[in-house]
Length: 120
Image (cartoon, rainbow, N blue to C red; front, side):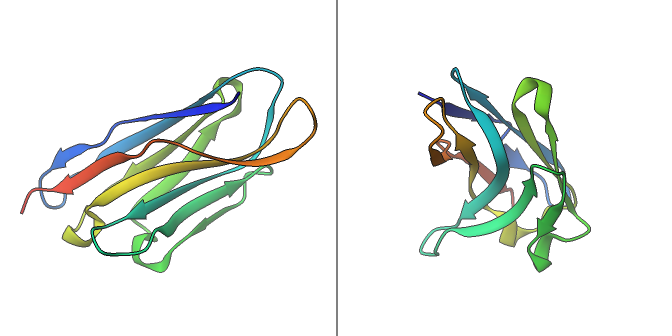
């Protein structure tokens, strides 16, 4: 069974930076793509950024130029570098992976979430 474990959230000063990490563990799987999502209180979960198997990236408009998604394929890990954080970035951030498991089935896997809070 594939699991995603996130780390790197916390409390940050306005304009500060954080780096989130998400590592996939398990056996017999490959990763087609990664994504970072977030959910603020009383809001729907929204996509922040994603990166495809070929390395192409997409960002929601509000984070363009401030956030960077990257991956380390050898470590089955994805990162989200967040700079110049704004109050609106406060949310629980979730890692997502589209995997192909050992039975060649496509699966959508989620991490447990990590809280990012800007200290206003």
